[in-house]
Amino acid sequence: MHNHITSSTRIILSVLLLWSAFVFAQVSSSQELENVIDAVSKFRVYDYAEYPLGRHQANLEKQHADFAQTQLVKLRKVDFSTLKETEQISYELLRFRLQNTVDEYTYEMYLNPIQADQGFHLNLNYCIKPILSQRDAVRYLNLLNAVPTFVDENLVLLREGIKKGMSQPQVIFKGYESTYDVHIVDDVEQSAFYEPFTKLPSSLSRAQSDSILTAAQIAIEKNVVPSFKKIKIFFETEYIPKTRKALGVSETPNGREFYQNRINYYTTTTEYSADDIHNIGLAEVARIRSEMQKIIQKVGFEGSFDDFLTFLRTDEQFYAKTGKELLMNARDIAKRIDAELPKFFNTLPRRPYGVIKVPDAIAPKYTGGRYSGPSSDTQPGFYLVNTYKLDSRPLYTLPSLTAHEAVPGHHLQGSLNMELGDSIPQFRKNTYLSAYGEGWALYTEFLGNELGIYTTPYEEFGKYTYEMWRACRLVVDTGIHAKGWTRDEVVTYMLENTALSEHEVNTETDRYIAWPGQAISYKMGEIKIRELRTKAEKQLGSKFDIRDFHEIILEQGTVTLPILEKRVNAYIQKTK
Image (cartoon, rainbow, N blue to C red; front, side, top):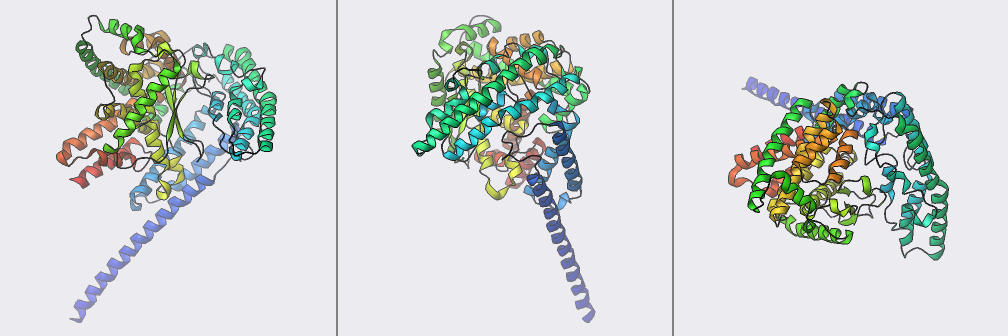
C-alpha cells in the first residue's frame, strides 16, 4: 500500500512538473514574442515630431533593415508551438513584415519612390484633409513646412536610382506634368493645399483663425509652391530623359529575382511562379468571359462581344452627365448596402465613412475610385470617386466599385481592423497586406449578388467586367514583368476582355508597369477566400452560417492567406 501511494505521488508530481514546465515555456515564449513586438513598435530611425513627413535617406534604410534582421534572429528563438492562436498570428505577421523590410533594402526599392499614380509628391495630396481643431491645424501646417526637406531627400534617392538603372520606364510619364503643374500657382488661395483653411472650425477664436491663415499663406508661398517648381524642373530636365525604355522589371539589375520576391510578397505565400499566375489568369479570363456572354444573350444584344463592349463604352445611358450625379449615385448605392450589412456580419464598425470626389490635382492619372482611411480619431474614412473625364466612368460598374472601396469592402474591413482594441498588437492594426485586403474587397463584389446591389443585367455585367479586370491583371502583370509583353499588347488584351474605357485601360496599364506584382494580389486573394467559403459550405451544409464565416475572416484583422486558410479549416472542424 505504501509503495502504491508513493508511485501515485510520483506520477502526480511528474505531471505537475511537466505542466509547470509547459506553463513556464508558454509564458517565456509569449514574453519573448512580446519583447520583439515591443522593440519593433518602439524603433524609430527618425522623430515624426521633428520630421512630420518622415526621413528618406539610404543610410536610414540600412539602419532599418539591419534592425529588422536582428529582430528576425530573436524571433526564430521563440517556441512557436507553445503560443496561443492570436500570438502565433502575431509571430507570423511580424516575421513576414520584418523579412519584407530586409527584402526592400536588399532590392533597393527605396531608390524608386514613385509610381504612375502614386509616389512621394503625389502622396502629399493625401495630407489635404478637413481641419477640425487647432491641433489639426498645427499638424497640417507642420506637414506643409516640411515639404522642402521631404522633396530634397526623395530627389537624392531618385538620382541614385537613375545611376543604378532602377528608374521607372519612360512610357508611364506621358501626361505626368499634371501631377505637379496643378500645384504651381501664383495665388496661394488657389492652391489645393489651402482648401482646408477655407473651412476652419467655428470653435477657433478670431485671433487663432487669423494666426493660422497667416501661417498657411507663408507655408504655401515659401515652401509648397517652390517645392513643386523644383519637382517640375527635376522630372522634365533630369529624370524623365534618363528613364529606361524597357517595360518589365526583369530588364533591371536582379529584376527576375526581384519580381519573384514581389510575387511572394503580394500573394503572402511562396507557392506561385510567374508562369503559375499567368496560367491561373488565363483560366479565370476564359471562365468569366463565358459568364459575360450569357448576359449579352440575356439582354438580347445582337452583335459580337467587341460590339457589346463598344456599345457599353459609347452609349450615353451608361454615363453620368455631371460629377455631382456620379457622386449621388455612389452615395445611393452605399446607403443601400449599409442597410443589408447586419444580415451578413456579426460585427460592424463604429467608424463612419464619407463619399467624396478624387481631388482635381491627382484625378487625371488616378484610378476610378479608392478608399482613404482616417488620419486621426476625429476623421472618418473616405470613399473617393473619380469625377474626371466622366465618359470613362460608367454607372454600371459603380455598384462593384462601391462595394469594393466602401462597404463591405475596404472601409468595413479596415475599420474593424483598427477597432480590435487591445486584442491585437498595434503593429497588426498598421499592417496592410494586399492579398488579404484587396482579396477581401474583391470578394465583396461577388457578395454583392447576395446584398442585392446589382439591379440590372448591365450592373451584373459591370460586376463581371470588374472581376475580369482583376483576372486580366494576372495575365498582363506577369506578361509585362516576366514574358516581355509590350505596352500595346497589354492595352489590346485589356480592351478585348474588359468593358473598361480606353482611358482607364491606359492609366491601369501604366500602374502595372510601374508597380510589379501588386496587381496580382486582388484576384489571388479573392480566389482563396471564395475557395475557403465553398469548402466551408460544402463540409458544413446546413450548419454553415455566413455571418460566422465572415467573422472568422475578419476577427483577427489583417492576416496572410496561409493563416486565413488555417483559421477557416479550424472553424470547419469546430463547427462540425
